[in-house]
Length: 322
Figure 1 (cartoon, rainbow, N blue to C red):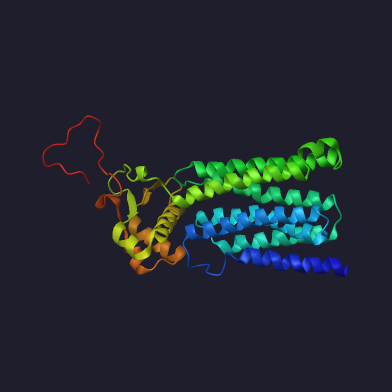
Figure 2 (cartoon, rainbow, N blue to C red):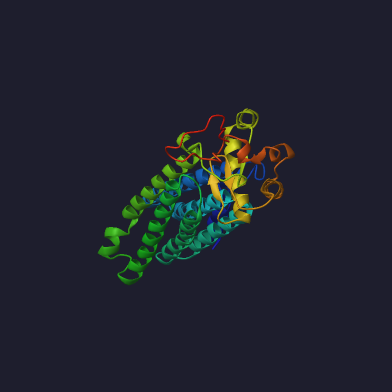
């Protein structure tokens, strides 16, 4: 009993340390910064779980198994936090939920014998993986393929995990069928593929939209963008500017689910959009007055084309495109 409690205490400490590695500056970074931080810690947890499992299979005791299970569940749970942050949600509530899920996993693995604890751990993994797939499906981030890749990776791994439990419960955890497709080796391979796919998607999100997408067509008075881009970029840095655009787009969707992302802002059907979005950004993301002052109608900048020319139509003398 004392050994189980000791292992549980170690697992609690490790889970808390891994989780709150992403939290020291919560509230100050932008949504993109927090997304990248949680995604990075998620990747570290996934790799760390594999290392712990290798140590366990080498015969180094159950502590490695407990830590491996905790890290394995934390990986998709922290990715879910990252995706929620990118949507504009508060990170703390989802982070605490991830910690609770990890602690449940630690308690089960430390106190319940195999294969029951294995089945519980696998089922716990399917929950955040499924939620990650749903969150990615709802994302309006441009370009869309990184989120589709995250969606497919999580959906496939969730289905694979459910199949592991189904095969283990019906055919047996020691059966040749389970050993062939769902044992440690195949499961590690499937998890590695998911990690690589999600890693590629996260890197693409970090890079942001391609330069070719630098312009967009939008009716006059329908766009709100971050203006004075060169000057603001020099003052705040490119990372903060990307975060501001992501937060602006998220705030717009809180008013209008049909809001369309633009390279430097958003297209939205709402009167007094600049003022209302400024108030929402101040309340949700603690934007400062000088940041709110950067919000302008896209018609006053070169961020969008508000009067796109029809193909083949010549511009009249003196006509100015805004």
